[in-house]
Length: 404
Image (tube, rainbow, N blue to C red; front, side):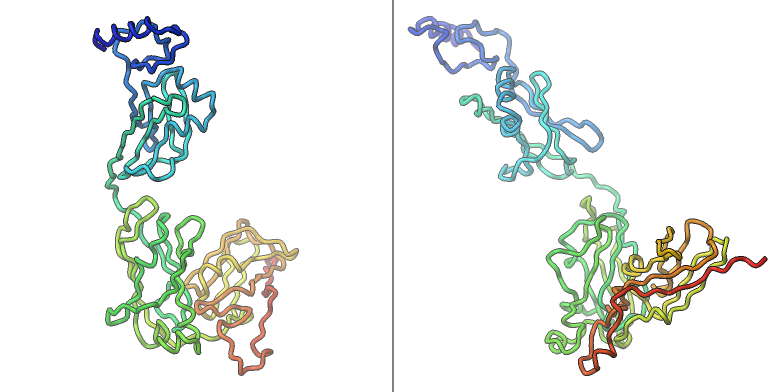
């Protein structure tokens, strides 16, 4: 500050009738709220600045420096909300989005804002210091920061698609698409196509749901065919036919434009080719399955062979192994051979005795026919002919004791 301003300031204080202690004069100094007649420091006062600093490899904090201790104390007396509203960080340059959530920490004359979640490379962040809540004439400071994009190696891919077989019924109900890492949501139907043997796009094959069907981890997407086209005698079926036609070949395509949860595209396109056979209209019948019991004392898996491909996800969670008391046996189940076989590895060697496989009635084949009822019911058939049990089906077997 030059000498002329200092002299003018001193004269103004000296000529105030009410006295220095009672005068309220906006101070030109950035010093803490000193009395108006105090001799200004000849040292250059610090400016208010905002900086972005990294704390770990993937975490950052916004640092506000140059704020007077008195002003910070005033904000702290008003509580955390006052501190958060005075020093806020938003995504984007316009600043019209809500403030980011995080923690405000005061360290001396410095205010730190630590975002709750890691910052995203490639995004712009706007940090604003607005002290007018406690200092009406305070100066607002706004600064923008942009983290450079990270060109990481694309590693996420389609790990599996079920049904895994290459021969599928005309009334196939769904696909399960498994990814090697969590995926972004809201883009599934833009990145999946069904093409026929002539490489023509099959229009409106899938049921596009606003709330996409994902598992909790975000690694399995359930893709449903439009049931209105799959079920016979419904208007969409009569107008457009089934998406799949028996005797023809198709290809399910997952485009690499789909981004994973980290914003990276898939490593490659995925293609599954298959041919279509006549529709499957019958329910699974557990009593017709072939069961191979292990030997007592062995670690050989229990094996159950179905007479058709069953729904991959349901087969994992609707088939259980029980002991003679009805308690579930701990172990690991596997669905194999194009979902036509179920195996169970017990955690312990098999003990001789009675066991049972419990099959829930909601278990389905790949066409949506469940143990409890078929996907489509022929109303011309008496109800007793297509009634199915609503209780679990039990398949008992015995593990024989070793011969003496």
